[in-house]
Amino acid sequence: MEPALQAKLLKLLEERTVRRLGSVREQRVDVRIVAATHRPLDQLVREGRFRADLYFRLRVVQLDVPPLRERGNDVLLLARHFVAHHAARYGRPVPGFTAAAEQALMRHARPGNVRELRNLLEQAVLLARADILDAEDLGLRIEPVALDALPGTEPAGAPAARTLPELEREALTRALARSGWNVSRAARDLGISRDTLRYRIDKHGLAAAMPQDFRETR
Image 1 (cartoon, helix red, strand yellow):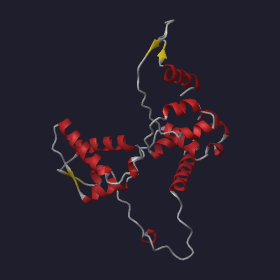
Image 2: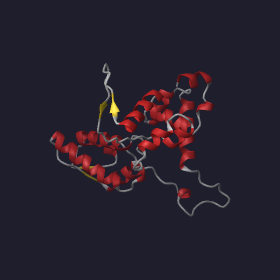
Image 3: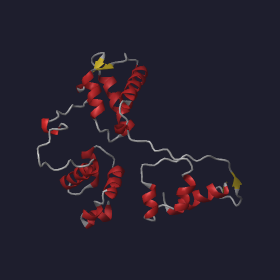
Image 4: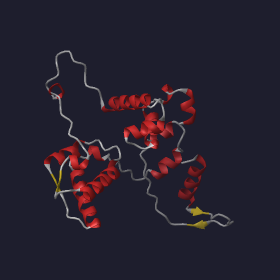
């Protein structure tokens, strides 16, 4: 949100008045604000990119909603809901899932979160050739787990496992390098939106490593 718009929203929250375009009179309003973001607002406040007074005005009741990949069996509950919804929408029988399909759904990282899952299952329902969906019908593969990746099988002297943020940073760096630091192309390769990739570039401090001309145009 641009700073000027932040100031206007803050005025609305403090004074509960607005002035319509072309009007010279303030009108009182009674509204409730529900705001959502995937950006780290507390960090943006520290960086001076989001007004601290607006941040604390908005943060009366704060709910942190984890991404779907961190919610365990919730993905299966949502998957069954979306399958039933799309089947009713297109007049098709409601298919079930094989154990392999459920395992694939549980393991998939889902960078597109719930919307990705919904669209994935809409396609699966439309193209279903049987009354049960397998992993292949979902376009997902179950990656084999190497023996040395199982807990308790690390060889002596092996380096400590890397954290998820480290793995994510490495994946972003590789995708950007492959694309010649073309943000749009790298986003397509990663299966995420350009805005999401730009946010993660900032999150992992990768902007400084980008060529100067890309830093200026990204």
